[in-house]
Length: 329
Image (cartoon, rainbow, N blue to C red; front, side, top):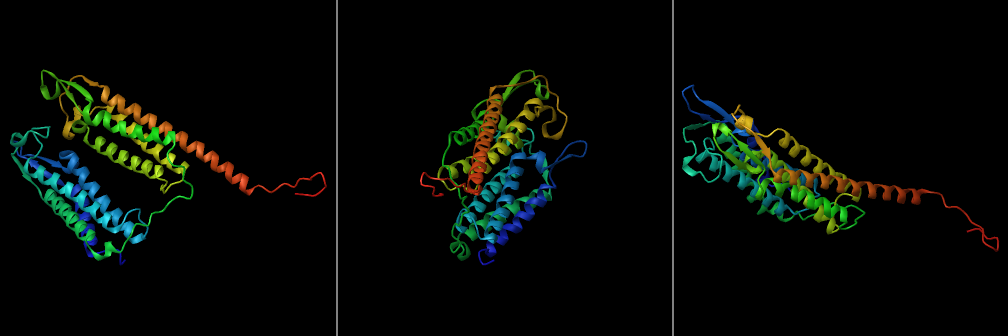
């Protein structure tokens, strides 16, 4: 417990507020019918994802500190809590000043719908994010963090970088870059009564999917880099299995959004929309995720068989042989 400062407990309290805020309403969009409420998950999806990520990072930091075995030092843990908490605070504060309703891009500024009422839930979320930021910074500068060095768990067997690991890592990266950065993901006709077709990237049109893929990519690439440095905490077969699961999750989620585009239920409500065409960005991301899953599975199977063979060779009884002089060896 000496490795846990009062600042980290403050961040944990903020995480509790963050999680409670995610289950509440954030806005009332004022109108003739008395207004429409919007919660965090559907109202501001990217901000809600950041709030959830901040709470998870805080809980992980507390768990690693209490366990006494962490791949990074106490100062780094505190910094991570502060950085994610700061991003969540900034994004949530921005969406309090500029609610997203009436504008679906990040460059609309004051043209976004301003006739909304902020509810208690969004204020609770902001306080929780601020506590995570302050608590993370305080812990990073505390004496408890300074006397908590990195003590990583490292697997006994290390293979370094293999072709299958490299292909899996590359596939995870492309699975995010394809649909959620520079390439268009959809072509949409008649969205919300529009008479013209418009192209959409995946980042704004499928926010929760993009956040999930981003997190999975970061986790996967981190594991691959650790393996390349021979500092993996997982055995080669377990590492391959973990990367295969990440690739499968990404491929499944992207396939879901290819088969069921989000436009007909934008913001959690029925929305008029015409033909939706899935463009190259999503196809590239999906194929890359499948490639990552297959490559990681091959890695897992190959090294599992190798480990089984090594174990059998180690535990098999030694057979005696007779030399030409009759001596037994």
